[in-house]
Length: 226
Image (tube, rainbow, N blue to C red; front, side, top):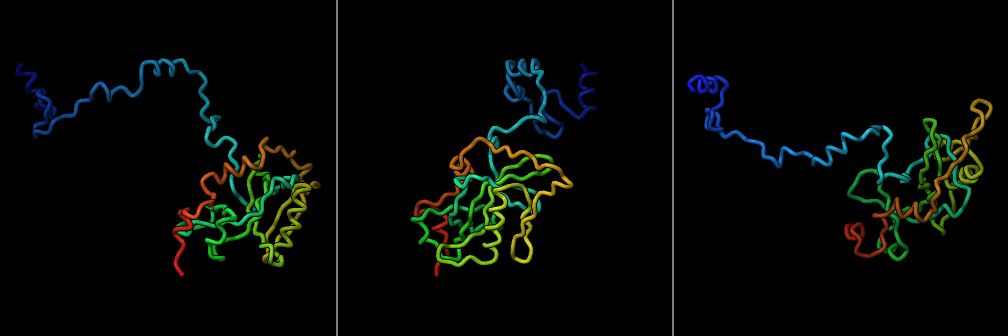
């Protein structure tokens, strides 16, 4: 008994569940020690399909991101029903322009002209890292009463060419220039395999929480006073 007491003193613990300083030692309970059930553990032991590198997220499956062609080779969906020209706005409380909101016609008058921009939403496909990557391009466009400038004219040419095949939309000195896919050096362009989805489902997914249709929307309420 004396040996046991001496041993506990040497290790800095006491036999009554407290440290020499009087601080109590936390003892794990049965509830906190069980990180999963016995049934879940049995399933883990029997699971042989272990390939996390091939796993896909159910939430991200089929999601089409917003993007720009950049310097990549890309093409535009040939069907004009996969396109929409619409005014958009951005959250003034955030930096950058990665969070565009579509504005319903009934709410246009709630916004100062400087907060609305006309965009031509185009369904596109990039060829990057030997893979096809669909995306929505919000290209700058003009209001119906405006005269298209050189930027808009160059965009119209790029869109027309992009519907016909693969190429680059290179931006320089305020305008776009189209350059065809170089078959001489790169061979035939990749086959265009568009996801089997309609444009309505694409837009409702991308802008699910970013459609301003009521006058009490937070982005209308936070507009500054004149």
